[in-house]
Structures are given as C-alpha cells and as structure tokens.
Length: 293
Image (cartoon, rainbow, N blue to C red; front, side, top):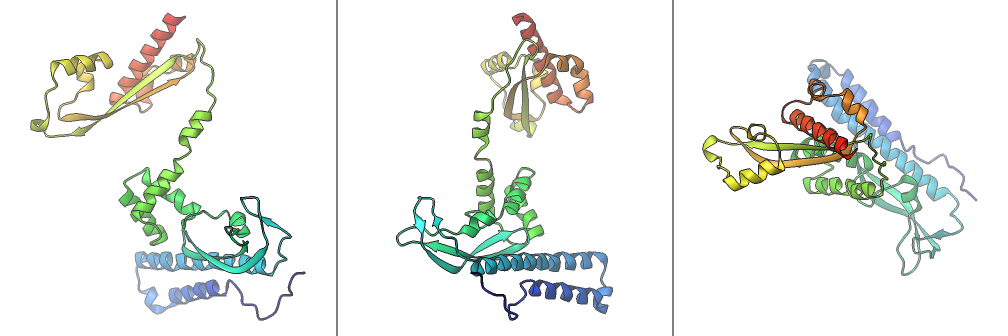
C-alpha cells in the first residue's frame, strides 16, 4: 500500500524557482542596467546554467521520493539470476551532465554476498561512469573538430568544470568501440558489372623548410612511382614532406560515374590532389570494369 502524501513534503523545485527569481531580481537591479550586453549575456549564461541544474536536481529528487514511497516489487533479480530480497533507500551517486554535477538518490535491492541492484539506474539509463550521455556526445563532437585540450576547454565553457582531458579521451574511445563490429556485421551489396570498384587515394603533408627536406633515393622514387602511377609533379610539392596517405576502396553504380566526370567532381568542390585522385581512381575503375566485362 502506498503512503499518503503529507503537506510538509518540500517542493523539489523550490530551490530552482528561488534561483530563477533571484536572477530576475538581479536583471531588474539598477547596477545590471548599467552593464553592456556582453556582461548581461555572461551573467544569464552562468546563473541560467545553475538554474537548469537545480531543475534537473529537483526532478531527480522527485523521482527518488516516488520510488521510496512506492510499493516495493515482489521480486528483484540481479544479472546473476539471483533474487535481491532486501531494500535500502537513499543510496546516492553523482552524475555530471551538461548543466553541472547532480546527485541521484535511488533504492538499492540487496542480498548477502551479492552485488547491489538499483532499478532506478535502468529506468534512468544511467551510465556506469560519472558522465552523462550529453557529455559523451559533446566530447565526441568537439574531439573530432580539434584537439582534446580544445575540446575540454569548449565543454568547460558551456557546461562548467565537468570533464578532464584524460576522461575525454576515454569517452571518445568508448564511443568508437563498436565501429569495427558495425562494419563486420554490415552486409555489403553484391557488386555487378554495373558497379565498378573505385580506389581513392589522398595524401597529406607537413609544410617544412626547404633545407630540411630530404632527397628521395632513386629506389624509393621507383617504388612510389609503381604504387602511385602519376607523374612526380602530382605526388610531390615543394616544401612539403609526405606525412600520411589514406586509401579508400568502394563500389559505386556505373551510371553515377558516367554522369559525374572528373571536371564535374572538381566543380563540386573536389579540387587539388583530391580531385586528381578521384579522377585517376574513376578512370582506373572504369578501365578495369570494361576489361573484366
């Protein structure tokens, strides 16, 4: 039987409403009226983030109260298949989200000699680590745009001090853990004579001083010329030392290649070495396809 609600139960959102009212008072003050728009914007950003954090905390407190006042389930089974017969309330844990750090209070179902089970963790889909899904998404988005230091700085400017560099690296690695499994299980389309095989090569270089460049021996030039069948002027540039080369192999319908020739690809934004790589790859794929047919 559920407990009756009492009138002395505090409002979980009272703290957030008080902070919102305090911000409104500050915005109405004569001192704030003398600020420029940048200072007011910074004030609203900082205090507004705290207000959102308090609203989130109030929601979590409300859910924790409802869980504690609800009738316990008849049986809770752990991942080992064994029941957890005892129930303990008020088990907190922290969660770092895009608004800051909040505390999640939930009930623990226990059994002697076995790991505790928290049903609220499954309902909220809480991660095993401290950082929420929103922080993980931000870490991945910022890390692919720039360095880890800049990613942590950008997240700190938006969410406060909720993430460090080493943890940002681990979050990105965890997010990319299933990429190999995805491509391993992906069923590729069958290639026919209408779908030639395209090989695309793109080389990146590091700009260096001319006196720091080394002259390639004749043997290396012969090997590179055999692997990359283009005139040397296309795969070497003055003052640039090759750093990495990326090879991409994929199938594409033949009519798409016929409709988009090399000049069309360059006009669409594929220029420079990339445009030449695409042009050579398309020409090679078409020749191989025609010879196979």
